[in-house]
Length: 64
Image: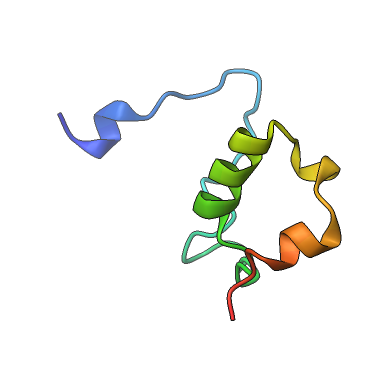
């Protein structure tokens, strides 16, 4: 099965041109400042959502 066979078209959205955000032809994404893999583990152990984290907690997971 090729990639082309895996495409599922959306009949409700005919204008889509196939350019996704972050693709080589799409919008360039800003660089990531936070190590999400580590901060997600921290949030799970503390049972907190991202909005509940203090600025100090978020700073702990910023790339240096």
